[in-house]
Image 1 (spheres, rainbow, N blue to C red):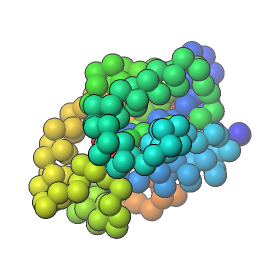
Image 2: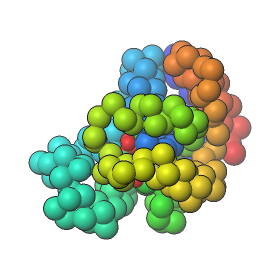
Image 3: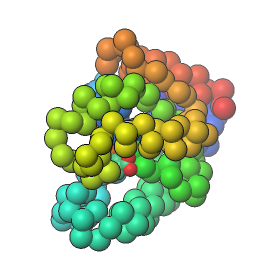
Image 4: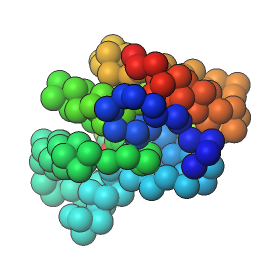
Length: 188
Ligand code: S3P
């Protein structure tokens, strides 16, 4: 697409990879970028649910988190091996927990960390019970603890750290596309 990130010389696959905490807006931003660019959208959680034939909460409750992480890791390897281009990859919030995944995410393309405040995250994630890690008596405490554990991992993985506070979705996408164009043209 003419308004897509330009890629002149880099051998990095031309993908946009969205990472960030649960409820940070990865899915909505992924869909909007898909609409704007016409790229294929891959949502790792949705693909896992489709392939496993069960929801993420069901995978967590019947197989456990470790099994989910293994499936997530295998899917990421598969995506990298496909050497895809023109894709938007929206990921589950915990994909950065494994070091090997962090490396693979950067191989996949331009990695954007979507940041939201704990208040926004709590508000969005409380709308349903799809996040097993937040189904506790103290979701606020769980969000605070997980964010503290993960922030440095998101930071280490991302090419771009984007604070979404006060921005509408169009502004978020415009920021991503500007920075991605620069990255694909000039490298890191
Ligand atoms: C998880 C985030 C979820 C999903 C699973 C685990 C996490 O994805 O992969 O519930 O560990 O943060 P979203 O970030 O899309 O909610």
